[in-house]
Length: 218
Image 1 (cartoon, helix red, strand yellow):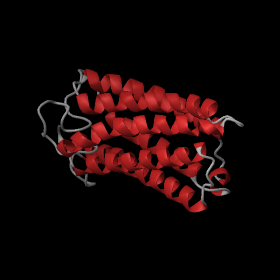
Image 2 (spheres, rainbow, N blue to C red):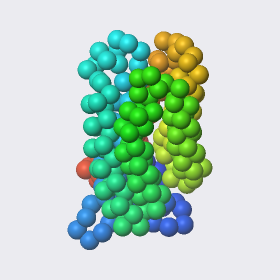
Image 3 (cartoon, one colour):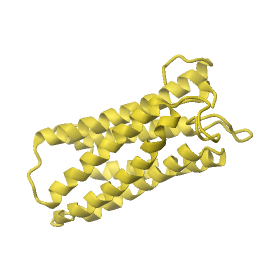
Image 4 (cartoon, rainbow, N blue to C red):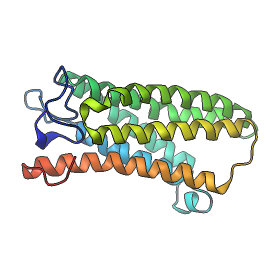
């Protein structure tokens, strides 16, 4: 993968053309959409982090569950397209990751509206189970991330930790445990940091490609 196209990862590593990370080999007439995937995934994760902050901060930013759900559906559709095009460019690692997380954001609205409806908070156990499943999905990519550079390792490690925190958080909701303000700060802050790292990966990749040299480290 050429360095100018790299959003995260070390160029030229791995057994196939997908191993270097976003970018690299392109379809005729197509630029790689993977940088856009990193940007929108990062920004949506930051939104979820802001929403997870304790009151009045999360709601004080004007965020509500309905608006966040609409944004999640839009991001899911965009990531699905990006993932399919990236797979068509023979980038297995990032293509499958984008398609997978498109499914996550696409199911996010349904999960939160139906499992955590008023009077049904015991279903927090169900949401905790769903978060655990996505934790395992993220672990799959974390295991292979070392082949794609330390930026990719850091991004998936933070995402993995985020799913651990979300699993524990919704388990507590299912158990009707009191959620401390500090827990909201930890979860919200961790998700915001995770989103920033993914956003930076996309920003660095686009900047380096635009200038034709490594301006921002990846």
